[in-house]
Length: 470
Image 1 (tube, rainbow, N blue to C red):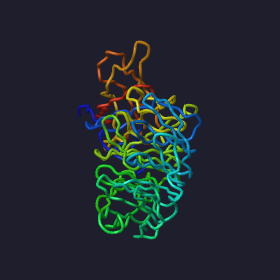
Image 2: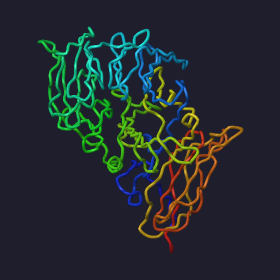
Image 3: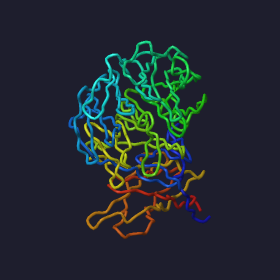
Image 4: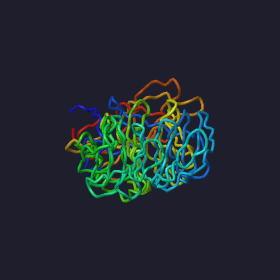
């Protein structure tokens, strides 16, 4: 029998619903990169520092009047210009200790984090109204400001006068649970969710009240800040710990391939989805939904798990930071993101980063790109006589050259040593790299990675096999 080149399943989705030794025909890890439209793998860009607040408080982002607005976890409000210059505009801090939620109105930006609602106009931040409720979420629709009262099933509305009549309130009472989330869709729908249900309110243009409840769905927002509007639908984590897509009164689970990973999360504290509530991750020509559980124990045993969903390709991948001291993945450093000036900014800890297509580090830290196949098996023992990649090369400079690494696990045993190859100096256009012989066995799993500061465009991976005894 002639030797055959067998392609590895690089175009198949990341599958985390079984132990990786039981998976066949899928990817068992896709880290800091995504599967592109042609079935190859593209590395996710890194983060370059854009502005600094000092300290290590989380930074949440929005925009107002052509400036980037940043609010820290300690309530400091900053206005940031396109050169990265930060002006402290804190008059009244945004208090409450929760995630900061923003809503842009005609002339100002309102903000809340479980405490009083604060607004920002041209000067310093100020209290919106002494009569406004302590709020976890705030929104704006057709001239009305909406505020979700903390620890209740009520939301208040104000007609723009900021007088906040205590009688101007609705109860979202499809189920007796507190309101966990608020989304105002581009279609003028007011979506309020608790753990057990989601209710849709719409504008009423006649009568004494401005809204009416159209319907409710018997599925809810499990967590307060884990919902986003994208692809003409609402996405959230429901009470069954599924990542679901709501459209109309129907919800469909999108997390079948990572259900086990979600169910294994040990701490959902401070978890969030996307730019909340209406800013999917627009990066390198793609649109993603970012799902982060910052306190969860990840598969490496460290804290922080960030899952990204390509809702057009219906595939997941993961983002990680890197602990340079211990040589281990850790939480991806973002706490928020926001698009402005045709760029995407990421709020870190005391810093604002910019997604940088020319940089493949996260600030000063290493970014490791890694993919891992499932088990490659042919039914009988085989000999892997060669392994090759088709990959973009010519990435080096006159002073340095980047490398890519391959290692193999044979018959379920621990991975062997890394074999490294150069990605070539500038002008090296030969796309194939050969890694040689990987021995004999019944099953083979391959891992491909790079920690160098370089782009990765991997088009194909193949093994040359020969059945044992032939």
